[in-house]
Image 1 (tube, helix red, strand yellow):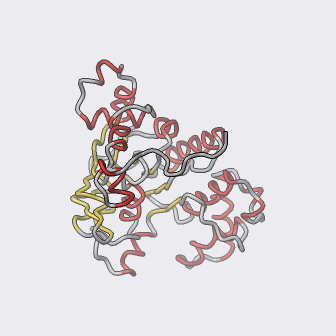
Image 2 (cartoon, helix red, strand yellow):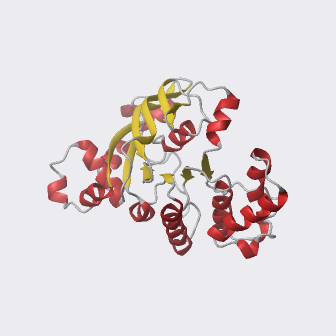
Image 3 (cartoon, rainbow, N blue to C red):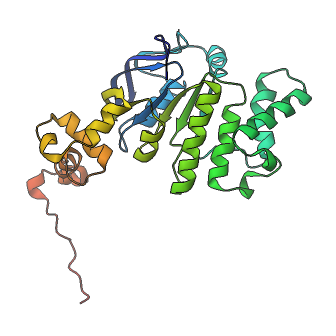
Amino acid sequence: MSHDDEPVIRVRGLVKRFGSQTVLKGVDLDVRRGETMVIMGGSGSGKSTFLRCMIGSHAIDEGSIELFGQNICGLREEKLNEVRKRFGILFQSGALFNSMTLAENVALPLREHTDLDDEIIDIQVKIKLELVGLREDADKYPAQISGGMKKRAGLARALALDPKILFYDEPSAGLDPVTSAQIDQLMLALTKQLGVTSVVVTHEMDSAFTIADRMAMLDRGRMLCVEERGWFEELRDTDAATAAGMDDDKRLVRQFLRGDADGPLAERKSDAGYGEDLFGLSADRVTRTPSVEPTRG
């Protein structure tokens, strides 16, 4: 796949804090036009916060985020909304309005943000639902369809305004393996048909390796690496003896990609200061044995 050199998304020095906690620590990222960028990381790595910063839902503390060459940080709401019309978002749950049919959900952005006649809106809705295989289900309500269909309906709504960028927040979350694979294939097909740029936040490695052009790994708010998919595939398949000589960051990424029980992530958890976390005590004053002896044989 060929991409323009100029990134459609450019993030530099992004810092995001919540109170005294720094969730993102100087993150940099470029996303090229027409590519699928997968952002991955464990729970608490900052990937969902990163996504919300990129769509303007969170104000940032330091750095810059450019979409289509425009810095969105500090924009007034009306200006930010103009930028938002140029991208679509698929939320984890689909985020459909339960009181509306699928067709009405997809039509909502068109009614809110365009002056199109109802007849044209109806045609656009049918086109978008057809793209995700739901045209015949247009009159159903969210309660009447499966989780996978909700994801597809949410995607149809995200496509309503013909966006140039699609953001996906855990698109495979809560889906069975077959449905998850179908969503992956749909994402690939839409990228190919529509030429959109896709940014996908996920911790599902099967999905990530299926859809990604490039991948980015976050850990504790740091961007560990941004590389082509093949680089991550090679690291994942590296044998244990070779991996033992790698630096901690590479070993950590490899463990995450493989889902191994042993490695830097496991070592970190075992050294996490159990007693301090529980009681503010030093580790040598806390026992890991149960405080109550079992009374049943």
